[in-house]
Image (cartoon, rainbow, N blue to C red):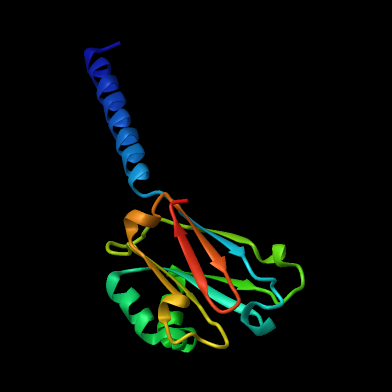
Length: 163
């Protein structure tokens, strides 16, 4: 075995160890978040007995602000279509069995710089004038690598962070 090959092997091993260490470090910083939806009211009472649509959006602060400003119009806006790769839609059926509407959504880490805000918005038939009842905005430190429990109620959403 030549001395050239002996020298290359430790370098390659060192490079491999460095790459694996960097990958492990980066994966710890960008953990999957979870949104655990639980129905509180019987599902026949949620949204007046109609199908309830909820979007979970990974957004930049500017996008989050736009979603908040649009409110229920978000569900019919071009922005929703344009951001489809950042949106996960969950529906809650109008069924008698409320356990059928419990859902767990995994939110992937941000793909682009700045996508650090999580927006959860529900399309209730009868919107409460208080937008905090159907829109939840969560900063990155509260959702990345964490589980958020969202109670789905008759006419509003309630979030419990880091339960």
